[in-house]
Length: 507
Image 1: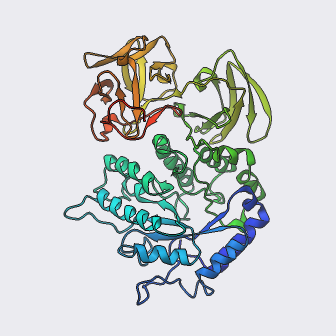
Image 2: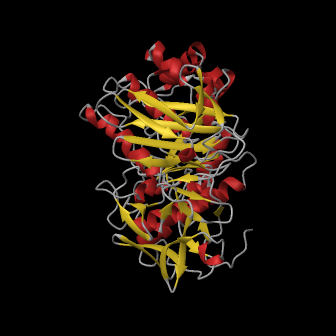
Image 3: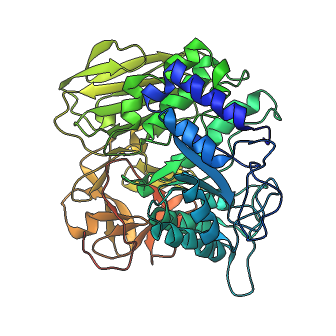
């Protein structure tokens, strides 16, 4: 929490060099809260706690840079930080110029102590303040990397303001990519020794659960941030630690370690520096892996990589060792073609034709890179991000049910926007007389759908939005991030980033 000082960062920098973490690509050291004095200086500037950091921030920035690192710092958008130190409210320009002068090039901006006003909703207040920081950074000679925590304060739960709503969460997610490079979208991951042992794995799964709702926002230059990698917590098994790393890498998420680095074990350093998995995380396409299927035990995710390879990530959420089999068609691949699959944990290669069988211990994750791919069809779950219910084909009908990984819940989406179930690929979701059903595919506009950054799935003929009505599916007038109209689709589906209401252009 607030137990930080200059020696800790010097020791950490030296240890990251010695363990190979810097060589693996972990090239930033970031301060968090509690680094500053309890009051500003008479001229309004911040000053570090001179007891904890006797040589000062400019000295520390120079030191870590001399070792090959960048240096990052923490501030808060309100009038006080979460730890009770001076916030940046009203001091954005002063603080930005101060950080730049100290040699800092990364800011994590938290969101404590913000309130709605008589004329502005809470979401609008956050947008104004974070937008102000974006403007200030744009005027600097050396703009800082901007890590935004605003979405976390709208993601729900008792830890967040009662004014927040799921629609506001999506509204915040819509503007954070305009202002910064990464955004914390959900609760703090459990990095303090304040919880029951089982709650650390549960915390990883909570943030993972938020991440899978947001793939449409990510693109090169902006990344959804599911928070820290907690590599040294004794209440996590090695399988659980490796699972978090593999899942975060599959998401192309920021890899930010929260740990006492000098005490990391060799097996922890080994997985954190896995070159093949880091390459997946750093893939130039920056696609976020999405759910192919989910049934309470097995989560199957996939995405395409820049060189044409296909990623397969499989998580065993169950409490026992188990085996599952995944068809090539579920991965958007051709069932009769043979693919080479590399196990990114071991480096071993196997041949895959038709299907792949995977055995995993409890809470373990497999991660494979499939090569020899010539064609991919975006394939996976289509689910409502509010109810978490999966769209399910049932004859000619469409319903929303608990996700069970059946072929009737796995959907293929063509380049023309046809949506068809794996259980019967001759049928496409069709709009007729403002009703939706499965009809034989004919490629007409009433079977073509477009996916918007808002989460709306819009029919090209009717211009109406796909809707979940309790357990049934339908269409209706498009609303502003209504819970019934916000959906997650497979990775690789084209996302229209201007929202809805802008005609039929793909630009």
